[in-house]
Amino acid sequence: MTLEKFRDDPWRNSHRAYQDSALAMSPAPEYASSEVILSSLYRHIGLEGASERTVPQSGRELDRTVQKSRDRSRKPDAAAMDADTFHMMLHAVLESPKLPNQSSKRFVQVTPLVPQAAIFSGSARLSSNSWPAGSLIRRMVWLGSPNSQSAVAMWQRLFDALTVTETDDVFARFLQSEIEAWSPTPKWAPVDPEEQPLLDPLDARGLSYPAKRFVRDLDAVIAAKGSMTRRQWTSLLEAIIRLASVAHVAWLCDVHAKSWECIRAAMKGVGPADEEEVRATIFPRSFDFLSYGDRALPGIKDRASAFLQARLGINAALWALEAIGVEPNSISSSKAIAEVCHQLRENSDALASLKISHIMSEVDERETRALLCKKGIGSNIMEFARHVLGQRQAANPVLRGYDQGFVLRKRGTHNSSPWVVGLGPVSVLALVHCALAGTTGPRSVRRLTQHLGGYGVIVDYQDIPTNDLGHQLRMLGLVLDSPDAESGMLLVPPFPNAQEEAA
Image (cartoon, rainbow, N blue to C red):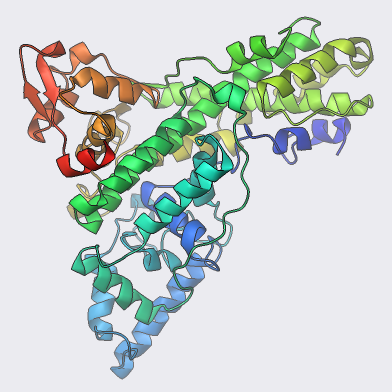
């Protein structure tokens, strides 16, 4: 690919220096729900041979197998249930709510309570080209870990926790063995993780960012597994995954926008002089993308639009350097971006002859709808954020209370009502547990606001006693009102035994 080909089709292929970067948004997110992400995580961590491509067909095949068994009054030798009962379990007991636009479609969609259910349920689309949502979580684990050894160990701990063992409740053990009898392959076993990029240690030192917070919280959630049923624990895990994954994508959007600021300035002959200046620019010490009680989607849309503009600009600069015979390095760190900035300044005269600004103006004008998130990658990012964070809108009115781990809720009942930041009960439980993990002694609600700040969610602790978050905390028994505590509220650990183990 050349600069001319980039101008003709800027989204098709990225420059390898960008594509191989640890900071590239890979995989590019599309529609997903928390259950889709968890199902895909099962497939990436322990169901080798099952992929997003095979899920829809596997679901149809299982449905046909069960129907044939119903007609012939048969069942697999290893199954405890007859075909009618198993069919009822799939389509009633374990059924996950369909969206309003899916109400007329027939497909198997069940709660990802056990790994074996992910073989035939939980793909992002009912087709063979769904995006691999689980690989986003894998990439987050690596980016949030200090080194490869630590990431591999975390990945193994997560696999062990997702495995159904004798310590799980009896229903989870029964369900895993029963589904395995009807859908025996592939077996649940560790999948060797592909090598993933790491954040440069110098960049990560002292930096707070969502992936790093997520890796710490995974340990806290894993420690709590023995304190509850499998269904409760998977709900807790989903709640952390959904907030962390969208926060990670929003953080990457900010990093891209700041990186483009450095590169654009360098193309004009100025810009950061060294890697320390680059680091201070692209990795700010504070990150926020949601404000509690406020509308959420407009801010996410602005970030997605800035990301798209940055992606175009960064790739244009990299292709321009290659066009004049300069090979840019992978822009995975502050040091690498500083080197690219130096290359751009050193070759400013040669680059001027390529008329990069003219090419960028032409591309921007042609891709206006994409840059405004009306189509393509930006629209997919918005759909991802809306469906992962937002409370599930079920087609069946009876199941409207199914999702309690949401981060966004509707302000009203109308379809056009805005989505505002408001945590569901399961999200509150999960975040309070993670905020108190590893601590001893009482902590005020300020500890919770600081923890939420690690994911970019801004809450004023002084507002908690009077807002819906304070109401949730009281209803769930997670606070004690105390005149001696900051804001008068002390957090109560939801799972004391798990907190003691973590400490």
